[in-house]
Image 1 (cartoon, rainbow, N blue to C red):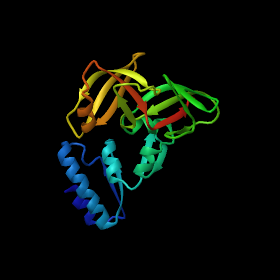
Image 2 (cartoon, one colour; image 1 turned 90 degrees about the vertical axis):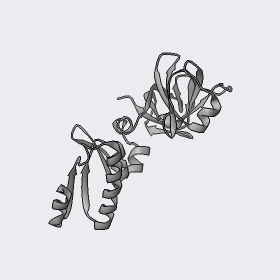
Image 3 (cartoon, rainbow, N blue to C red; image 1 turned 180 degrees about the horizontal axis):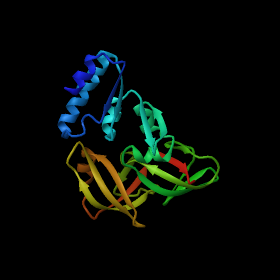
Image 4 (cartoon, rainbow, N blue to C red; image 1 turned 135 degrees about the horizontal axis):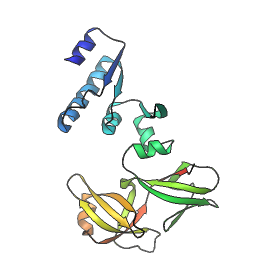
Length: 212
């Protein structure tokens, strides 16, 4: 009703301030698809304010990520999620694992892993050498039950959440650090993973930021 009244005056810009905040998850998803179709049909500029990241990334042509009243990054949903320009954007959008690392001689070291920087699957906002923070998203890791002689992080499985299209694992590394990983249902069934079991984690995509 509120949206219909707002559209009746044919506005040039439409402001929607968390319009789906009080709705359950299923209804929110249905209305997101409906609103996106309506937006495309009307060709109206809309400013959509939300704390739901999935909602923002699905609805928007352009996303603005703000921190304490300051714009950290603006761009397409793909740009801000896959190519964050600041550490805040990296940690704000989606779950992420964080490691303490160091850059020296063109190599990145963290945990028991050493990789060229920049290199295949390794990128970031960093010039020079010194301490760095390393970020890896749960879906950007490879899980194996054997190390295979490849540099990896040994961890113990603490929890398995298998309800859904993918399987989420909560791990604990040798030095006590919590680590999240996400694998496909097919791979989970084939690996026969169990709570208390040992796995070896290898990051596939890594983002690096300098320690201020």
